[in-house]
Length: 516
Ligand SMILES: Nc1ncnc2c1ncn2[C@@H]1O[C@H](COP(=O)(O)OP(=O)(O)OP(=O)(O)O)[C@@H](O)[C@H]1O
Ligand SMILES: [Mg+2]
Image (cartoon, rainbow, N blue to C red; front, side, top):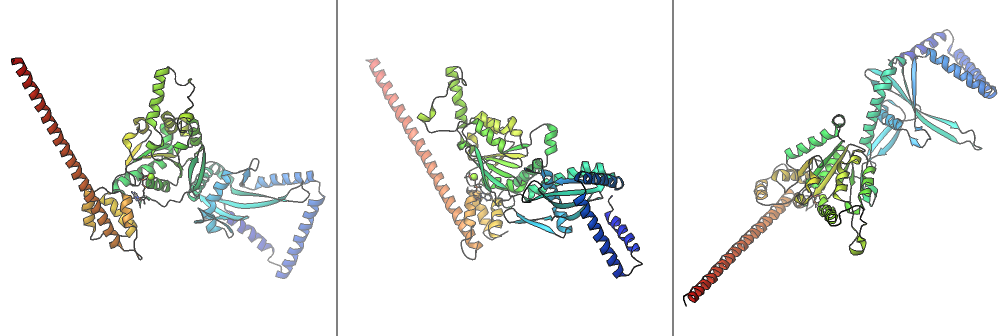
């Protein structure tokens, strides 16, 4: 255990005893002359001693010092190697020490992250803070040393930042093993929490991004509580299961298929997922991807801790047709790949040549494992249109149906939009919701404030009217369909009657003819 405090105290104590017999004025005079002499000697040493000699003296002094000094120091420089790369360890330590720094250090550096939303404090140069791990105290100091560049005519300051970790030599194994990996892990986790998340979209084979700032959360998502809980648990379990996936030999990724009519919250759920897990979003526009090679390139460029989304997968590509087409041509010509492709551009508008097998490879091929910790989410309005190979378990592990608004979902929206837990109109709304189909997007539109100040009664009445109108429309459509069905039936019956009449008259004619 480091006992620096007591070490300093002892030194201070012995000095104090030595100076006790003198008067304060004498002490100061003495001290002044000692310091001046030391500085003079040091200046002489710096200036007149040959560099090699100075270097050797330094070296042996350090060795002799470390022989008696029981502490070990590790330095973590900001830049490693060619000074081009900022050391990952350095930033991890910076993040790791940020909380300790903000409580202990007296001079701090402030930085704003997440688009000016959160303030991050780190210790300033030459500050020192203590950290405790498994009951042992370590010292970390932030330093910024400046060196003059020697080969320059105009001396330019060359600044180097580093953290120095000091600990007693008996803790060497603990520090080099568990402590440093703990610092690295925690530092990275803080970095992930603090980063401004991004929403990427592909422009051909390149990703471009904007800041991701969707406010959706699972709390505000209108969904039945048990369904919400199930998805939440699934996501949280996934995000914490790195070791499990490694143990069972599976790539650390999970596929979600969200399906349901438009306006039922599929895109909103994706935003909520990303917000829950602190992931980036890669919104992949498949129609802009030229071919399978480009698709793979895009996949490789995605980072871990991300949600890769393909919206409206049924519209993105005519996947089933694309799978069939090569087979047909294969049958006709015998070989598929060697055959030069017809110049399609001449006859039809340029289409993406991404195939179903390319997409399947994207989801669970060898390349899909790179990066890890990734969700792949497909959305569709028509789940029945999708090729079963695409959505089988293992590829799309979880199928989530988002459907029309239930009363439970409505209550979530009422709480979000109107801050209401209950209201006299709720019973009526419940009955109407049981009779009619309305999407959460439509309900949300009714609940948007319509007056200043907002009035819940007005919004709920608007919803009731909307629901009644939808119910009336549905009723009308139903009776029309029934009528049409009846008409169709009547027509069919009369056609059959006509047919039998004709048949009867024909047979009568025939028997007459036979009798003659
Ligand atoms: N389940 C829901 N919970 C909360 N808000 C919802 C929900 N469903 C829809 N909304 C609201 O309706 C709007 C449209 O929803 P969203 O874009 O998520 O629908 P979608 O299912 O992705 O539709 P599409 O199939 O057309 O892409 C959202 O802005 C959101 O405010
Ligand atoms: Mg959508």
